[in-house]
Structures are given as structure tokens and as C-alpha cells.
Image 1 (cartoon, helix red, strand yellow):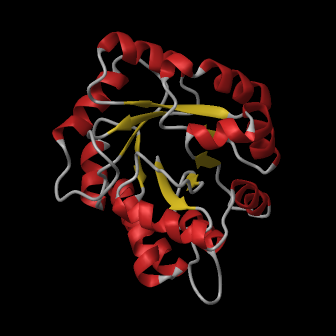
Image 2 (cartoon, rainbow, N blue to C red):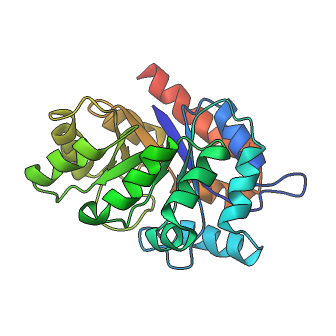
Length: 245
């Protein structure tokens, strides 16, 4: 599975906007697309995605606005949203879940929501038909991984390495280790994100995992080119590499 991440609300060019990037990467071979709802204190995000979030917020991006725009996108693949628990809490768990579902969202990722405090959100999401994607860190003990996969819906997001999102010159050993540990205890698809920077790294980790989330490399391409076509070309290169194996 190939899941690109892009920042919602990020302007992509004179002739379009971020939804054109979404359509472009979807048509380039994405199996689903993760849309980040910008937040002022994105603790999991590295400098590239932080910059994209700041630009989106400065241009007036809001959670309701991004969800409304998603409602008008026929991407042809499932859509997930990623944002932080403070934003979801202020919106209201049930209201956020219901609004997201009404706008065509299939899943949500809330990376700073502790497992021990996740039940109120998960109950609201389940009730609205939103799958909650749980994150699994490489430092998590086996007992915690068991509880994470029991709660996971859609797929398990295996965090490839500790630290914030960003590109790395080589695939971290921890990426394949956490994927292997998760694959041993669940039939839910395991996707590795954080530090997946090239098609070659994606192929390497997918020898163990079921797929990858590609974020910083894509967001950097959008920031540098402001081109939906260039974004699609990048994701197409990941798609081709994964298909070749």
C-alpha cells in the first residue's frame, strides 16, 4: 500500500490549490491519501511539514474549511485526516467525527492521543464510521503493541524511527524491526511512516511491511515546485518501484 501525506490548505500553484495535489497523487497510484489538518504546535512534524502547516494557517486554512474542501474532491481512493488531539477536542469528538465522515473521510490519525486516553475519541469515531489508525513506536514494549493493534482500525501506523517526521539518507533499522514485531501479532495492515524518503527505502521496508506513508518528501516537492504534476510524478516513482518490488 502506498499512502502519500499532504498538508491540507497548502497552496500549490497559480492554476490550482492543494486539492489538485490530492487528485494528482491519487491518480499517480496512491492506495489512499492522508491529509494533514494544520495545527499551530505540530509536535510530531519536522521542519518541512511545519513550514507547510505555517503557510497553510497563514493563508487562512481551518479544520472546517479543509473538511469542506474534501467533500468536493472525488479522489477515487480512501481519504484519511491527520491532526492533533487538542484541535479534535476543541472541535468536539463526536462533531469532528461526524463532520469528517460527512465530508468523505474514511479514517483519522491523531498522533498525540495517548492509548490510555483514546477511548472517548475512538467511541465517537466508531459511531460515525471513521477508522482510527493507531501509531506504534519502535520503543513500545510487546504488551503495549498488543493493545495498540487490538484498537487499530484500517491500518497500524508503524513509526519508522523515533523523532519528528523528515527525510533520512538511509532506512532506519528500527523501521523493519517495528514492522516485523507488528506483523507477528496482527492481521491488520502495517504501514511504515516517518523517514521514508525514497522509492528504494519504500521497497526495502515493504519486504516486511504492507506499505508506506510518504510525507516529507512529497510536501517538500510541493513547496519547491508548487506543481501538482510534480507531486504526481514523485508518487508515481514510488508506485513504480513498489510494483516492481
